[in-house]
Image (tube, rainbow, N blue to C red; front, side, top):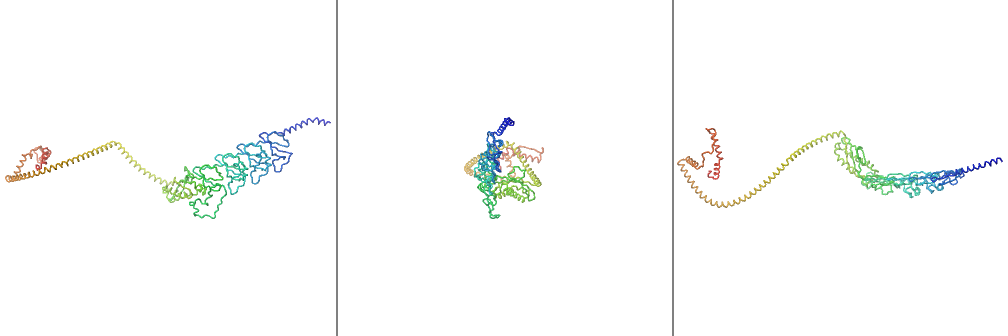
Length: 639
């Protein structure tokens, strides 16, 4: 009775304890799942054990359950269940979520990602596990948004979405798919509509190949699974003005072109200048017009910007404008597109000479593909052909000339080198447009001698110029003096002109007088001739009578003189005739002027001088002049 009473007395207390325990159990088993949470259940007991190798429990199995709890208030037996609250998975706008499954069957051999299973974007783990899913990386991705995913069944990694910037191109390489054949370098496009590699399962279902893809991603944002595709960004191909881009295609099967035997050297088949295209043995890849065939495209790309897959197509930039190639020291400014050191040559007389040369060459756009097919690049063309030709040409010229002769024949060297370059480069479809020698550096000791000689010649030329300047100065001074007297010169020249005109007028006047006088004289002559003819006849008759009379008088006087001479003598007859002349005034015996010299006595000298001066004065007197005039007019009186 006492024990029973004690038990009854303790019953209320035990009931309270039991009630408290039940309340605690109830409270422990109650939990709330918030809106931004997902509930993950783990069964601890009272269930079937999971098979070996299984990680996530299905219904009724002990372990982490595949099903999750959505937001709400729940109660689970605390000792049987464990509830873990996990935040929902949030994928930002510029991100993408990659998923890795913790449980399910292993991936098939050779596969990298598991096929996509319809499981409400991994929010229904039970559907994934009950389906044909595979553990490991999944081909499906989570796009931006919020997902209630069992993080004990799937591991979600948030990574950056694929962004292709401006002036860029995305080259994709698939990590899974059909293995790429060894004969291909670039995978052919997949038959699936993978929407620019954003649907990995469509790519796999379309029998997409692994490896570099021919399709590219243009600028923009793409949700690409990085576990399935590797995307690399490349700059777009920019073909500058004045150039073209020759494309080498890596797409398509390898081309095997076996040759039965080698081509003999020197045959016409090897003559590049006579063949329509380069010989096949010298062309690394055939020229083609099909972009799906491996080789070099015959038609290059014009200047511009191109979104080309650099893995599928290799672009070789070929300049089509003037290409400048310099052989000069590094200190030379404005170096050309390609540069070498100065050409070192040796003259015939053993002097080392450094020659700096610039060559201007051009490649036609139509020949760009042949250049790349033959040499692989412009640098190889210059190294293999252009540089050796120019270097050999100048070395040969220098070996045939002395140092000073080499320098002095600079123009000829340019012309010969340019001619040689044109002839040699034409066989390789390169045009040599111009060649210039910018500088020829001689040894200092030889240049010193040449400099001194040139200085002496320049000084000599300077002296000649100074002499010419002095002559010019004299001429200027003379012209200055002439300019100062220019007014007088003009006045004198005008007077000369005036005098000449007056003389010409006088000549004309004299000529008129002469002509008029001549005409008048001819008229008077004619009149006198007529009168003279009449008077001549009369005078002839008179003269004949007078002559007879004079003759009779003369004969009578002569007879009288002879009779007087016989009576009184000849001297007395002469004296008588003198006295008669004095009487008639024909002889003057009294002087008009008397000049006495030598004193009162005079003398013989004085008498002579006196007679001489008297005669001079007499000749100058008017009476003497009149007598001479009368004598000249009357010949008989003169006699």
